[in-house]
Length: 502
Image 1: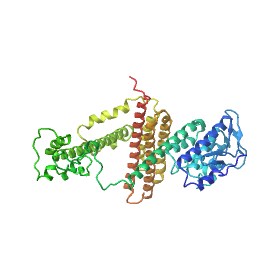
Image 2: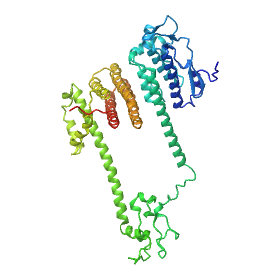
Image 3: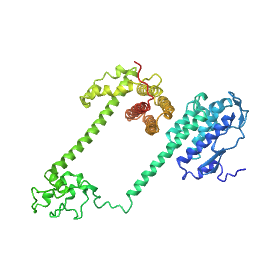
Image 4: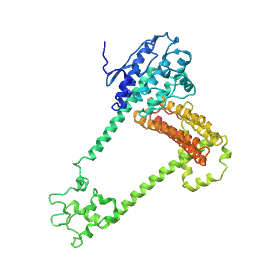
């Protein structure tokens, strides 16, 4: 019999939480999932999947154990347990209510076990009694995201916690998706190691930042040092070197003629002594003007970039307002005020209207008949518009229900994006997953503003808190539109987008 000297996984996580990395934690989840694929293949339900029943064979290998509650089930059937002690906080709703156990209920328990692993041994629903857990699950409340859990992995957990067992993924699909998350976490760790190596190299004592940086190879002097020719003993001013730190400020330039005015320079030479000499006479008369021109050009490029980004942001806001007007039943009353058109006219440049039309076209030119991401984005925008209408008159105790509808719509959107991620190229997955993380942060900000509005509902700050709540909801809707744009671009690159039927 094998000896597992590291003991069970729960204690191992608690004792080594300061040294365990995200890569190792996701690897543990992947190994347990592979064990459950085998059990599902032989029609077995485990019924007690938790870290206390997982043994640690080595620091990078765990094995599922404790099959005391395991039972054999026939195809398309389930096992109904007798009255006995069962792990309520790990069980699916149908198992708690009807003592019904299937492979889908094992999927639910496995997601809770993953939550334990990413929480480094914390017990699920430790703040609740067993009798209160089912009420929370019936209301749609699930375990919160652990601090260091990758957003893609937590999104996978929420799919496993679908109330309807038919909507939960099977273990084979989970192995594929967790393997993708594991590879993604490893790539991110490699990138962080590179960044740390670069930072360490920058602070190496052998690097001297006080002296000037080395000159380019084309400016390397010959055997007579930094002289223009044999008969011309004129030191080349550092301000003319491309690597000189003085290049950052044009007003500090000093031409060689100014610095060496006591010397008489030959106006024209009967022959070209060297390439550097020819360049010297070409740069000398206009060195101040050239530097000032270069400085002005860089400023103009920066201003142009900032202006273009501002225009893009305003175009996105107009797109969202347009969608709100289409979805808002109270639209004519809300848009009757004259302030909005004046503000648009004041801030928008003259060429913006045609750019707005061109910017919205790519979204409209794709076939949306079976586009779940687009449908869920529209649902989220619709819910945000409904929040805007309801939050003004709703009592503070109703805020939770209103914001909860936004959270449910966001969960559906993230789940639909996770469904299409495996079909996209790896180079674009990181960007989309980053946008998913941003949406999760936006939702957390919305919940924070909701609580603030509840706390100040009877104070003079209630209007300001409601305004902040609406701003957070608006930001969430805007970022969902950015998610749709990122997914559309990725599908176009992968030739997965369908054009509009003529």
